[in-house]
Every structure is written in C-alpha cells, then in structure tokens.
Amino acid sequence: MLPVFDSIALAGLTGPTYLTIGNFDGVHRGHRALLAAMRAEAHAQGAACGLLTFYPHPRSVLRPDQPIAGLTSLFERLSLLPQRDLDFVVLQPFTPEVAQTEAEDFLRRLHSHLGLAQLWVGPDFALGRHRRGTVPVLTELGTRLGIGVTVYPEFTWEEQPVRSSRIRRLLEIGNVEWVAPWLGRYYGLNGVVVHGAERGRTIGFPTANLSCGQGRVIPANGVYATWAMVEGVRRPAVTNIGVRPTVNGTHRTVETHVIDFDEALYGRSIGLEFVQRLRDEMKFPGLDALKAQIARDRDQAAALLSLDPQVPDAPRFVDVPHTADRAMRVIGRDQADLFANAALALATLQGAAEIAGPTVRQHIAVEAPDVEALLVAWLSQLLWHSEAQGVSFQSFFIEDVSAKALRAVAVGRQGRSELAHIKAVTYHDLYVRGPESGGAWSAQVVFDT
View 1 (spheres, rainbow, N blue to C red):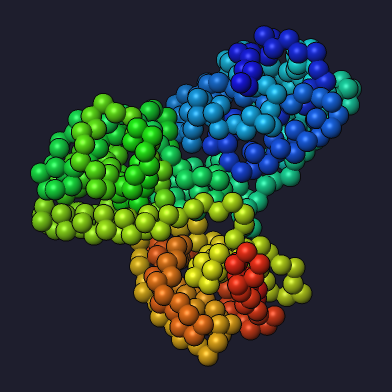
View 2 (tube, helix red, strand yellow):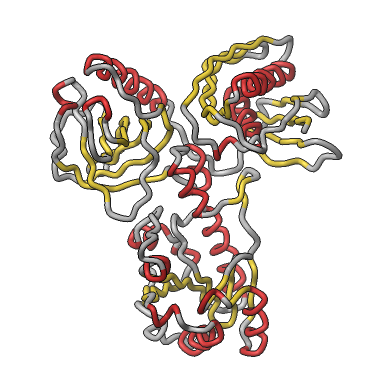
C-alpha cells in the first residue's frame, strides 16, 4: 500500500528524492503523464519518487469567501493516484502559517525532511508566499541548495491543453463528453440516496435523489446519459440535474432513474458516471408532457449506453505537420467511428468544447461516389450547418454508413467560438484507409483555414 505521510516533518526521508507538488485535482491524464515521467527518471537514478499535496485546498484558506469546487475528494485523489508511479505521498496541512512561508524556506524543509534532489513542476508552477517562487526563482534557489528543477511541458490531448481548471469549467457548462478523454475516465459523482418528493414513482419513472458531498463540481443543469454503480453493479441510467421547473422546484437536485431497475435505493450509496449530455433542463406545460419527454430521455440513454461507449485510451486524431492550412490524421475502430472522430477533429479546431448555449440536434444525410468523397461531403455538411445555423457541434452519432452514403445525428450548442474560422474541407492530400491491421481505419483530412 502506498505510504502516506501526514506532513513534511513526519516523513523523515533521507533521499535522494524526486518530488512533485500540486493539488492534482481529478488526477487527469496530464497528472499521470508527469508522474510516469518523473518515476522513470527517479528510478533510473536510484531515487525515491513522491508527491506532495496540500489539504485543505490553499484557496479555501487564502480566500474562504471564494470556495473552489473540486473534481475529486481527497480520498478519491489518493485512490486514483497510480501507485506504480509513486513511492510515497505527503499530505501537508495548509495553514495561514504555511501560506506565509517563503519559497527558499520551503525548499530547505523539503531538502531536510525528504532528502529532495529533484523538484518536478509544470511551466506555470509557483511556490511560497505570494507565489514568489516561480520557476526561474526556484531554479536559482535550487542551484544554491543542490536541488535540481525539472519543468515538465504542458500536456495536451487531441490538440487540447489538459488542465483541472478547464475540466471544471466544461463540467459547469455541461460538456461532460469532452472531459472524459482528458480525465481518462467518465466524470463521476458519489452520493447517498435520500428521500425526495417521490413524484417520479407516481408517473412511472422512480428516481434516486442523490445527496452529494459538499465542494464537488456538479455538471450544469440538464439531462444526461449516465452509468449508475449500485452495490458494485454498473447499470444504465438517465440523470436529471436542476430545479425541476415543471413542478415549481426551488432547489437544485441530482436525480437518477436507473433503467429497468425497481428496487428500493434509500440509504444506499450510488456512484454516477456522466457519459453524454442529452438535453437542457426544460419546463413542460404539465405532467403528461413531462412524462412523455422522460420516456424519450430514457430510451435515448438506453440506446446510447447499449453501445457500451468507451473512453478512448489513445488519441482519436493528431495534428499532422503541413505546409499550409491544418491537416489531421484520424483513427477509428471502424468506418463509423472514423467518420465520427473526423467530425470531432473539426469540432476541436472550431473550439466547440467551450460553447454553453442551448442544445441543438441536426439530422444529416449525405451521398458520394466513393468513401473519400463521402468523408469530405460529411464534414462539409457539418461545416455548412455550423455556418448557416450559428451552432457548434460537439457530439456525433453515425446511424448508418457505407462506402457511398451516410446518415448521422450531430448534437451541439447554439453559439460560435472565436476559433470557428474553418473555410472548407479540401481534397488535398486526402486519404481513407481501412480496415488496416487490427481492423482499424485511418484517414487524413486537410482543412482550409
């Protein structure tokens, strides 16, 4: 089991030690990439490898009037940390006295109690009182104290910078499908089922009213396809977050309908994984209209989850160096996956992840003489609808596809990003190949910017 020390002073390590410092909220792919790189270097040098995190979050001490919601609790962070990459963790209590510690004094403590030899940080890291211990300052101090400083570059995934702050922001506007690849898992919430108004049961859709812990990021109001973990069993569910305007609700709730499940859940702990946003929260003229929409939501969530969607374990597209414009190489498990991922590459270039307007669904059908032309026609249709409707598409569902025809649904938000300046999808250097070794498909598309 991973050793956890309750403070720097209690660690008593002689070193040499490689250490990184941070909140590591969410333990996302960027965090894990840094830890893996640090572990490899530390163990090659015969050094121990550790992480120091503050508790509580420094902002709750420095700015108690501006609390920050977290992606994970402290317990979740510790359980998510890859134990193969760490030899120890230090939980340093963050107090007003710690906040006043100068960077040099803090480094000396680390050297004395942890045997610090190398400090690994990100490019925007800062330490000590008033964050005066910037990377250049730490590097100069390290030279005098015999401590090396390694700056790990910003981590990107599918051409997007991965940061905890950005993941929080996207969850707060409801774009849950964008953050899953950055986390390397679906965003999750845990809570205990408590008694609510019990209206769901009276209209045929019993719901579990979830009491979540304080200080956690709750996705934006709306309806989501989710997985519900009920006593270790993963079940399909549809989850509503909001104030229930149709029944004149007054406070925000998280309510989950576990599909094809009718056991009593009161008092049980449930974990939710947010897979896809289905729609905005809406006010309906009456319970009959609400009941009909809930049935549609349930069917849509069940259909989506029956496909067993997976969080990608490798990038679905990568930027290709090109003499002009933007070229993307796209990978897919099959042709449908390839075409959906190509559309996602286009959406990424257009900055669609950041849009928070009303939900829009667009049915699209295209035909073409061959598979390469079909890919261009599909992406060009998305681009045309985006320009004509002022919408940013974010999710893509291929209903049927062949070498010459495609039917699909594109889901997005009303609104445009400042990055939405793709002029056209070109035939220059275009190719579609598949299936290749392992059954995968690949393509290259050049966008005129």
